[in-house]
Amino acid sequence: MKHVVNAVLGLMLCVVAHEASADAPPNYVSVMGSYVVTDDARGTDEGVGWHVLHGSPINEWLSLELNLFGHRADHTLDNARDNVVGGGLDLSYLYGSRRFGAFILGGVGGAWEDLGNSQEISPYFDLGVGLLLGREALQLRLEGRYYATLDNDLYPDERAIFDARFNAGLMYALGATETVRPPPSPPPLIPAPNPPTQIPIASDSDADGVADSQDQCPGTPAGTAVGTDGCPLDEDEDGVLNTVDACPRTPPGFAVDETGCVRAEQTIVILESVHFEFDSAKLTREARMRLDRIADGLNAQPSMRVEIIGHTDAIGSDAYNDKLSLARAASVREFLVYRGVARDRLEVVGRGERQPIADNETEEGRARNRRVEFHILSQ
Image 1 (tube, rainbow, N blue to C red):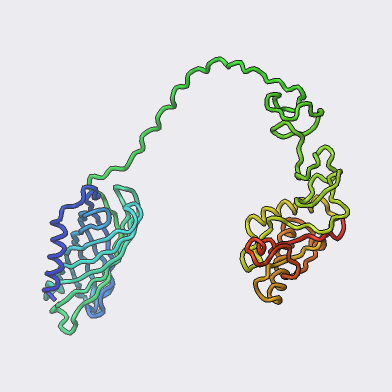
Image 2: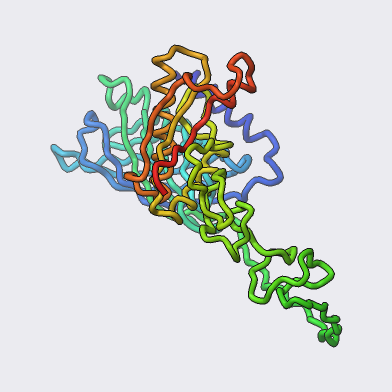
């Protein structure tokens, strides 16, 4: 066992001899009080004591710590008192920072024990964990250590004596200074503004807010809402200007008459750009964007009722495609309901692969056949 202790001490000394990093933190000292839970073999109550250490950081995380400690504890069966003084070398590893961090440590050393009528010096191993809380120069140090004292002739029946020490105290970094933030720089001097440059006012003969030099529709009637090009707006892009559009928010893809409303004779509308993920009823991002505009149009015409018809290509069985087409129609309905369209205005049906509009032998044709249609039931 002594050979093991010597080997560990030799390894630690090699680490000490290695040149520390130039960026290593400063050395530190710590003074702590101790509460000791002793091994039952000692026959003592819990003890109190002290613990001091000097630490030498190797780098930002590793440190070597030289320890001195002691404690006293009263025997439970007589008036004798057990006094222990020891010292050793630990290697500690820090997690986090020295302002707030946890650490683990382990090391070896020796302890002298005095029972009054007999004394003994024995080697020990120790392991521990702890916390650091505080500032750069001064921290609160809390730790717990577990000691295994070996070859102690005062207890011949025990191969090792196991004690636990709980330490709390202050740790001071030698030569450390608190980082002081420099005062903020004064604001730059702002030169006096130059006199404003006279900007010539562009002419706007039709008073629509667009200069004549950029107006592509000069002579717009007064009060007409125009775009940045000076031309009257067509918000729903149905070819009928807002100024005469009786249904200014017609869903995209619906044919309209001269008033801007859906033609009475139109009953079927193929929803372009409403596609799904392969072999699923999940709408693509482009489809959701398209359906957003359709929902706005349906909300603007609350009397319109439609039947949503789902179609598939010819890949797969008839039964599977019937089920998939119905699921796709239902997916469109759920999206429109989510966007505010009343559910009782929307019916769904799946037609599977039975009504193709393109050749199922080509990829382009199959893509066109995977579609959704609106059947207008009432306006």
